[in-house]
Image (cartoon, one colour):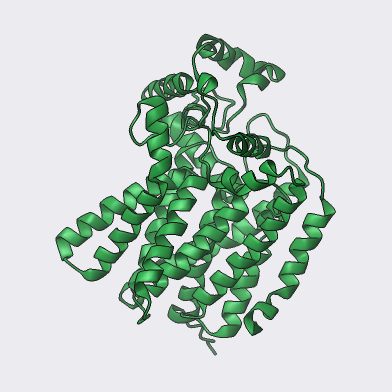
Length: 405
């Protein structure tokens, strides 16, 4: 209770943000999450005659009770306050194992007041839930090898959080697969118990997500099929045209820009009659052809995509706005600190606990995967707790400041 009271001001901030936007205003992906939630309330996920697997069922399952009981979506927005304060409490508890209480409190408040995250609190989007799931995963993963009596419980909960994260943001399904391969190889090579336990976390996480993979296989006939959104993202990342920076556009909006219409409308018209899954395959094929033909442009788009993940900039054919500073300033501070902490991390690598390395692997694979597909800054938010935990550990434990006289 004493710990919770330390973060009461944050909860008040979140409540003010939600009450400032109490009505449901469709934006970005929220209309799709609501649509899937309404489908679940009717007993199915996506209509068989018009199959759409754009995202996993993690967040729609949270929203489904509101759809079933026809409750106001305001209640679902209030859940974001619970998820965000829960994420901060998890994060603070994780930090306390590595840094002193005042620094842990400061870093937890930085997470809780991160400007791009605050903008998502009153929205029906997956980012706040994803931050909570990552913080829960990190807490229980770090407790596995710190003398905890209930290590099996921590192993199970870490797996559940990770598995549900993959259902919420399908990119993390591939992070699970990567973690499984890495820790299987490390365990075969080193035969260390720590690698076995991390391997089991990823195995159980995949089991948590497996019912959805069974559903997608029965619907599409494709193994390990997480959704049909990747093709469009990869297509825009591979765009070879000079004015495109790799950010994605809805096919229905191409005519609003002469350059987009000239360069892309013919292809989208050609695949328009295909099913959603068929369009996804056609988009992937075209993207790979473009990458092979113009690898330098793909690298250029990738660099721009990293900029969007960290700074929400640049976007094609889009005038910049003052709100960009809400993303650029914290992103610059985080980026500079990260670069400065690379050398201390390497120099004192033997002093870094194994669980911190495990989280850094998770964060690196997540960031790398996000950077390969057309992304927004909000896609970086689930990785933020890992970055802040690493920076806090390095600055508190591995760096000393000396004044020269």
